[in-house]
Length: 124
Image 1 (tube, rainbow, N blue to C red):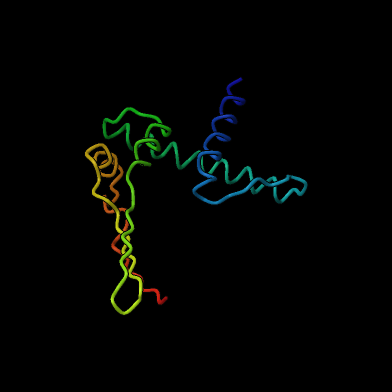
Image 2: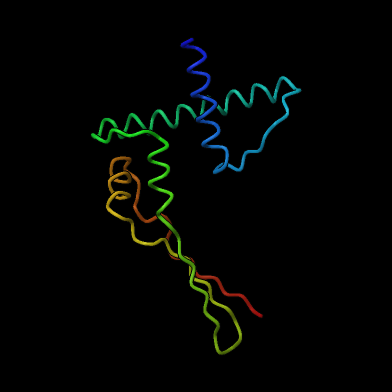
């Protein structure tokens, strides 16, 4: 039963990580693909356990799903401006982190600036 529970937790970790990694379902007909799938599941599991343990060591008692739900509200804003010359200027910048975001970032020793401002020009 313990092995089954661990396998289920590994699969859930992979399920949580595959969307951000742009991983798609694999039809496991080749041994290499099966091994790759198992490796990615275990890698995702280790990442999530490491995050949970680091947070626990910092006094934050929460699960990966709670962390994910909390951090998904930290957004990036894009401002689109038309210039007098007919070009378009797009500026992307992460919005300021809320206190709940900052607590997680600080505990994981991650910068709270999710992305530096990016400016792009496009001609019409």
